[in-house]
Length: 259
Image (tube, rainbow, N blue to C red; front, side, top):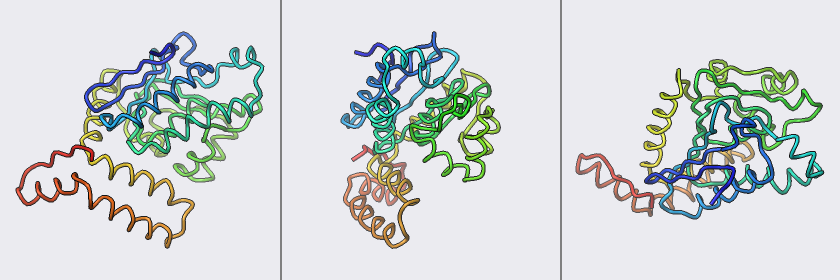
């Protein structure tokens, strides 16, 4: 089905693996198109209740494949509008949790891709870098949106202007990573555990939580209060809400079906 990514569904979890390890999973046009298609499938498949994004080999994603960019002779505007931005929006708008399993370096647009995810687990040897400045460019693919929301303006400015490498432990302290593990075996183990946990939650509620939190930075209190009312009314009409109430009354663990 795909040439540059691995697309694998296990129960209610969709695993998407960037699969160009010979170039540290750098983006080319084909990979960007396939990633977008994969997230479209994730949004349309009701069985999928969590998505895991990771990389094959030693890197998560080293950013744009500059050789591919030069050969295509595309403009930055064309590539960002037609490839990167639709992918980032698809991840951010997906009403399901997206976990980044950071297996190695995430540089440039690769870091942007990681930041667009909802939860990030990194191996000790992983790192992040806003490398754009080193070639005279500005952060793109959503980095200038997500980064300051996570670390604050001053630190985001520092990271973008210096292009310094952020180690896994530094990323954990800054909130760029939610959890750090010591090796690739534990990375897979904790990624699977977290994905199973997220996929067992009331998916509709998780999607609305994601939307509320994402919109809270641009909305006033009054607007958010109204949206909370709207979403609470929707959540209160789901089968998962009824299951939650019944399981509480029956003193058992709830089994949410995602609807």
